Image 1 (tube, rainbow, N blue to C red):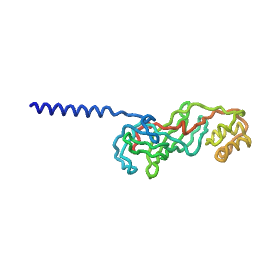
Image 2 (cartoon, rainbow, N blue to C red; image 1 turned 90 degrees about the vertical axis):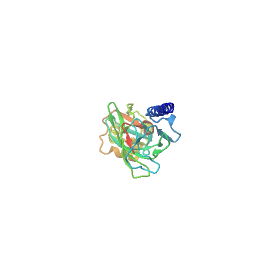
Image 3 (cartoon, one colour; image 1 turned 180 degrees about the vertical axis):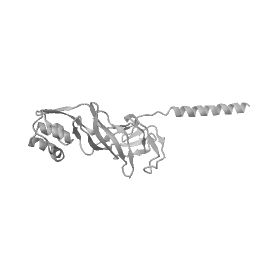
Image 4 (cartoon, rainbow, N blue to C red; image 1 turned 90 degrees about the horizontal axis):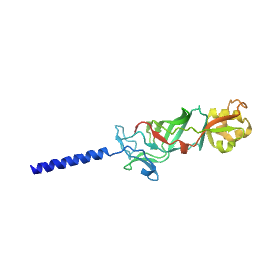
Length: 229
């Protein structure tokens, strides 16, 4: 009887410890504190029925709330009007790994989506993740922070500091062309930006409010729903 009681006590203790361990697993958003110098880590993963996307992957779901650092390889700046939408592609800036170190999303994977108005600002809405070095594509529901700060551009603005090298939306190009409407402005825009000026009406506007977005700084993504890999 004594042996039985001890066995039951040990069994109960093991079960209690197991339950405590399960309850203690947090749902965390990856931060610099939990990441190595070249990767971000996610703390909690769930099984998935999909096939793994590479030999290093486990079938997992990355929970909503985790952060994906991104950059743009297309431009250093994006200029759009507050009511303008623009399709762009972002690049995953660092490896995304599980807390155990398993590679989930390799750096260099691409995320297609759209900048579009959101209330009093603009925000990037991710649509599709294309995994680097594979044929795998995944639907992704992730957004950037809302960008609300605008720049006022008028005839006295030093446009070279704002617009040089920028990816300029068609609507932004139109209103800026209305303000400047001369060869100097076309030279500032360069080839890609000048193309946005086709068909604009020149000379009627005195100033314009635009968003000047730094994609490497402003467009990091937070998952709004679980991402199934």
